[in-house]
Image 1 (cartoon, rainbow over the protein chains, first blue to last red):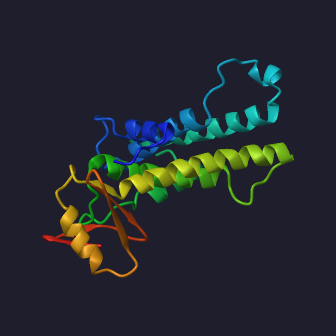
Image 2 (cartoon, chains in turn cyan, red):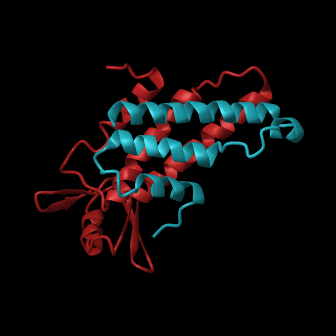
Image 3 (tube, rainbow over the protein chains, first blue to last red):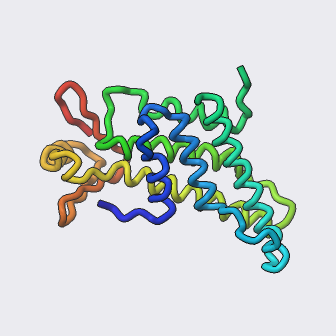
Length: 81
Length: 133
């Protein structure tokens, strides 16, 4: 079996949840987007990291993308659950 | 009923038709889910970081591009994994090999340890007792 990266494996683990039926596409999509947010644009561990890391643009962009991914996931979950 | 936002509606529109054909199967439910997840990721990446990338500064541009590339690379990995069928999943290795030999433009690689990987624009279709690529 092909070795997956940690990020891709985390996605598969999230969508492979026993509680999600393979035909529940909106729930699979929601789980995938939540996992992607955590893997690709994780929440900053320290609220002041933006300041002392000096990566303000990078942090702002990733935070913005994270919020949008999570918002889409939440909408898909809420509407169809 | 609440309307979905354009972002969520786009993702849903892309995800719903994935594998609608009930005669078309991938080897496992996990791979099926991976295919749907990959479609969702690509749709979300296109909504969240549309091309051409609009940015105020070069730093913002590179940050957005980096995020988009990471999202798409996970989607690519999931799709590649979908088309990897292990011998343990189904005892179809020899059958697939026979079929692949007859199809132009499709390469099927067999590797020590019993798995095959398909390259090219190909899908395995199992329908009415037949397997085709």
